[in-house]
Image (cartoon, rainbow over all chains, first blue to last red):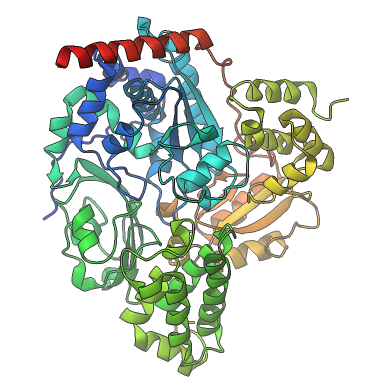
Length: 434
Length: 205
């Protein structure tokens, strides 16, 4: 049975048609948390986030408090919010920026106060035209209310917030590429080390980059305390999380559920959540955590949805997406399409990623569309091994950023889980599902 | 002589003032250039170069990296159909083929009347309403061939002009002013906060 009695931390207003307006926001407790935070020492606000042990909700799952602690001593610094949500089948940040932009803005101001940062940027995906308009409106409203600008709410703290539109590039979700985009350049990820923008970020200054959902959790954490947040979930996976469920299910959508307390089966089958597989068919595979993640078979449906639980089984919760493939779905076509995506989105800096993604895509294309050979499976695994040597999890990296090492996940999963499907494609001279 | 119309030029200058460095305004300025011309014209690129203190080659090189910028003229409506994983599982490829027939243009090209450009896109983050279609980056939520056909007819007749502005117009909500936190205030604030921190550290000893 699914556990659905946890509080709605970030999606509490989604039930209202006017959830994005200032009026609704103020009626439902908006800006109470910020006023409270401004009466606390900045370090005390940061300490609550530390106590919440809030893991970053963007994909890597790095503790937000630890990211912040790297910044605190810097003289000039910036806060940048990553709203460039582009991981295929991930749509939780889209939900948050359109449905509750004020909550995001309040979270950003709280974070800026805790970090004593006076200029913050929200980098939003360019394709979110409506989201950009709603967040800009929320920022305008916050200025009018005195929550942004000079000496906010009569305190000594001043802050400016700028909404920055992206322009269509998956790679800009990588935090150093995002910073390049914010500097007005091509979205090329930066060479590491330094590993963290908190050391060298925007204009070479210390910068904290946090995800939209991470920021949206802050008003609740300030209102209720970090301990109340940490009391939810199990182990390192605290609080609730938004999961974006897509694919062959009856009720795809964004669901906020408590971390670890629910399994993939709960999410997919509970009537209040996914409502089961379309047509009552069987699950063939699930892709947890975005298309960069290795797949799971139906044998792992009862795995609890927590960061470490999923990590131990060789995949990741990643971006909070779950895609369901049913018994009629073609796994070869799915893996080919995912590879085509990576091939299109590779920024081109590193050879293994730029060339490897294209080679894999072409081999997968011929398997799916006719012309595939039995030896292609070994060829594909060899190509994958050249990008991420050893094909282990977490993957070895041969490239500047993790886009490269994400390419093998789907192809490796599909070949190792469903070799017979690949053979059937070769023998049939194309996709038997067509 | 500015290529930008006075209002666009004014908005461009407002945008530049928001960033610590002019070049940071590159992406929003390119959106503005596209709003005026419908695509990135040579003159638009040159204007962005002079506004950001870069060269037109640099601007073009940057713009070419990003999918939303068009270096050649496109239709009034750019129709994007997603075929990535969630949409693939919901018949996105077949939907794209239908769109191509309805609009009478190949994927990646513009209809002969110059009204529609059809694109195959990557994931648009609206996967619970698959297959996902955007027109000028507005979600139109037409998931069946029939509703798509109605949408196209409505666009042709101008019935959706309010919801779907011409290609290039991205953000219609204008920022209500520039930066408000005074520079000196920020410097003072930082000095106060580090002094307070030092004092608390002293007290804690």
